[in-house]
Image 1 (tube, rainbow over the protein chains, first blue to last red):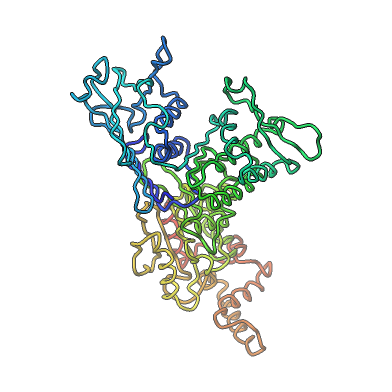
Image 2: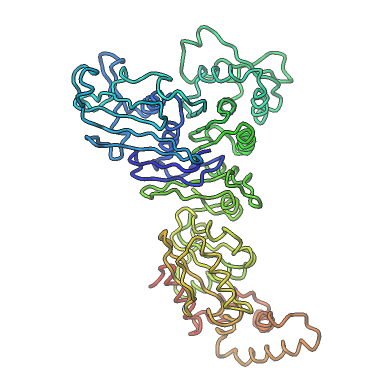
Length: 360
Length: 217
């Protein structure tokens, strides 16, 4: 499990540290304090497909220089990855996560386009972005920076070509990532495994009469994307016909997504942005209990963000004040311009909820 | 119910919870409203709960907090009470001074929170809140007060069960029983000026409180 996370020069964090991380870590703080950036940093450090991760989060944030003639020539507006939103030669950011005596590193630096790259990139760019990670098998990767200070999408290494020796899975859930396609891919990995019971258990917290869930694929789905909730049907004990999962509401969809993600993160990491979205406070207690049990059983380390009062309080309700664990629950508050998070250990979380002390 | 409070005070029990706002309002402090008090008071139902591990650390980490005060009774051993309170606070404030000033402690924590301690009655003697209140009995009620103390002492020979360490409480509640109206609670005694909140002997405490919470006028 990751114990400490350090961010230097990444997005709004000139120098920032989160320490004493536990198995389930809830990150709180004001709007725009950097909570999502922290999840992105952990994702970059631990995921197998780093450039997919980078591209997806930047596209989400609209940090793209759009080429009106061809989408293939769109560029990532990388200055926003660096503190201060400006880039120049020598600008760099560094992410470090400590896990026992292992270190995961992700470094990115703007350098002058040296002679060794001269034939590699057409158009002779002035600057390149140099990226390296902690895996010794990896070489440094160099990508040209366009005259608009963008990173051309068609020069990024695709899929698993970077960082191969890592069987750890990192699952990152944002509202936008819960597409039918993504969910069905995750479901395919879980169906008829022991983890499928986790799924039905989770959904029963919202609809107790749910007996079974199954996916139904169609040609149309493969080409469609978007946020419609196609692709799954459920069987309720009091109904003959199967019904689409969308009939059961937004919370059910979120719960399905969360459970599929954690089931697919065995021995890895689950990242969830705004984990309370779509969930009633009574559902949240069940959700935390499920996540806590699954995280221990499947050896998953969980990082989530929230603004919601019921959300942290229902997590705090399962914090153990008598026998707190250093591998247990933490709440970390991010405050702008402070170099460290305000850490609430498991015992402090329990005290806070008992005494009505506000952690957010 | 959690809330976002800049100024918080921790007290041992409901008596302090009700009394402190009355005392301070009588000394010129606007106490705000129920939902937005000038200082939010949290009572811990006993000293032991307040100094349990991590409690003061957690309080100091509350979101939005700027000033935290603590008021406890000295009871029988003021020095050991100071030591145990200091030890409980060291986890979060390692540079807390070694001795408690007579005018009460006000200290800036490394995280920039103002932290204050007052040990009733006066940071030096044995006693409790009721000891402090006995000192602010107005002149014109002193005769009755002397009598109340005599009578309470005499009650011991009639098998009155209160212990010696509780004598200050027994005294003041006896005296309050004979006021008009009889049997007022401590905080009511302040509001109705049966006790004098502006008595000179209340000044050190009132001054400490105002300085701690930046309520100097």
